[in-house]
Length: 274
Ligand code: PHE
Ligand code: CO
Image 1 (cartoon, rainbow, N blue to C red):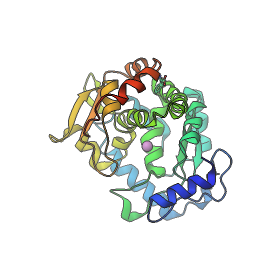
Image 2: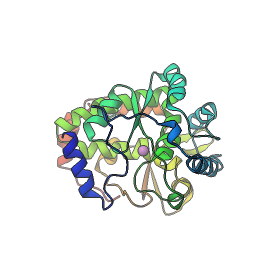
Image 3: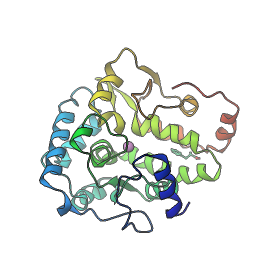
Image 4: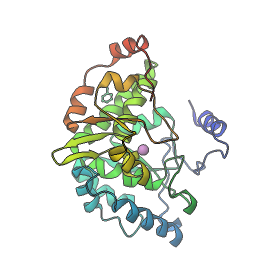
């Protein structure tokens, strides 16, 4: 899919068109993080979102997330990606690339395969504090970036990017997307102290972090690769099912084998309700 096609597809899917500004994208869909373009109101929104979410992390966020978030020291201002990159490159050889918003699959996977994490540059409006349909700076940064400091997650995510390019060729993106969703976005981990969140969609949402860990309505199952790939997900409500890993090493090891045959097998297995 080329750029024009992508823009047309996204515009057709949402009533308000594409939220970000795609006018000055490079070939890889990256833009500049125009730091001086953030207004005092934007900085204020960041601080409020940060504080509200930080106060929910105790006993809910996994330990890797909490320690990296502290190192990032991002409570008082929107982070500067180039400064974060110095820390991140030293820790796991990943770096952040600023993007206007959603990317076409190949561009997204290509970045992950190159240990580059796309982070949306714009931040939500005050009336979107509790719910936002598209990923913004707060979700992308607060939810995802701390986990990139974990070596096993860092390696898993790169393998995911390479696997994504392959799944695209094999016409199996539907299955691989579910893996991303139920791990990187909504994953839970059993830590010695108890169940904790490591998925960015959980960690960046005030409602979902409590729902995922505490609600009696939520189903929590142990991570099972085939089940994950069979299970549909909800994009506009809290998840009904969450999958629990015992370690990030388990995640990496269980997803390391070649998925080609698994994708074939999945065509014959039933889809499971969310
Ligand atoms: N093992 C997968 C494949 O062969 C690649 C992959 C690794 C996908 C890790 C996701 C996560 O396609
Ligand atoms: Co995300």
